[in-house]
Amino acid sequence: MRQKLVVFSGAGISAESGLATFRDNDGLWENHDVHEVATMGAWRANPALVQRFYNERRRQVRDASPNAAHEAIARLEDVFDVAVVTQNIDDLHERAGSSDVLHIHGQIVRSRSSVDSSLTYPIDGWELSMGELCEKGSQLRPDVVWFGESVPLMSEASRIVASADVFVVVGSSLQVYPAADLIYHVRPGVLKYFVDPAGPGTMESQGFEHIREKAAVGVPLLVERLLG
Ligand code: NAD
Image 1 (cartoon, helix red, strand yellow):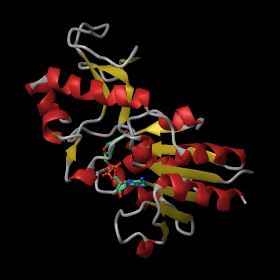
Image 2 (spheres, rainbow, N blue to C red):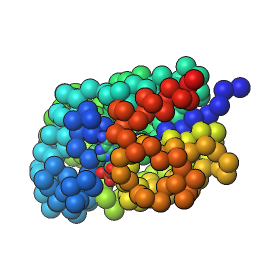
Image 3 (tube, helix red, strand yellow):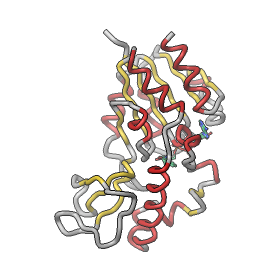
Image 4 (cartoon, rainbow, N blue to C red):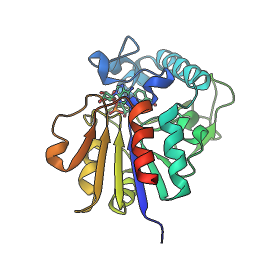
């Protein structure tokens, strides 16, 4: 039976693909205060600004390519039963070839009804406009989880993390909750790795081997070891 390897990724894994992280700039995300663009209050106050912000993120994601870290994670499927749990709203894991990816904070390439969260749709191109409606007649919003909203996929993500025989965290400040709590669902005795040039300084005391490299360097090195 193949071992189960779970990857938990954050914005840092996509940094070398040219997509900005969130916390590295003091809570400013691409020069916007997150409260003005990534909360329900922001959507109520100025939905057009929120759409513009996410349209720009979507255009950047479309123009970005997976990097060596995403690609190395996809190669792990040669040997392991791999599940990726990502905080990222980009689709770079899928485009690198990973076949099992759970986006706990949603997907920028999809839209969602603003009255019925079960209604989601692929977005054609990079732009979602005011006036585009779901089948129930309400405005479509990006299918992403905003700050202050609940994370409906948390229990599924916890179950996946608890099934890991090997657990790898890549490029996350582990400051965004409840997602950051996932690391506490790993079973005792499981091998744990953390690839991030910075991140919390306490990972070693929590049983992680902390590989202090950028993802595009550190992840391929780790994958070589795990496949070796
Ligand atoms: P974060 O911005 O809070 O933390 C980024 C982490 O990445 C830091 O620990 C930093 O040291 C590390 N990092 C920076 N460059 C790196 C590199 N080259 N290689 C490896 N690590 C690197 O990100 P987070 O913990 O994911 O939480 C922020 C939230 O913002 C997430 O929930 C996510 O949904 C959202 N977000 C997503 C994207 C995306 O989809 N690409 C981008 C920005 C923010």
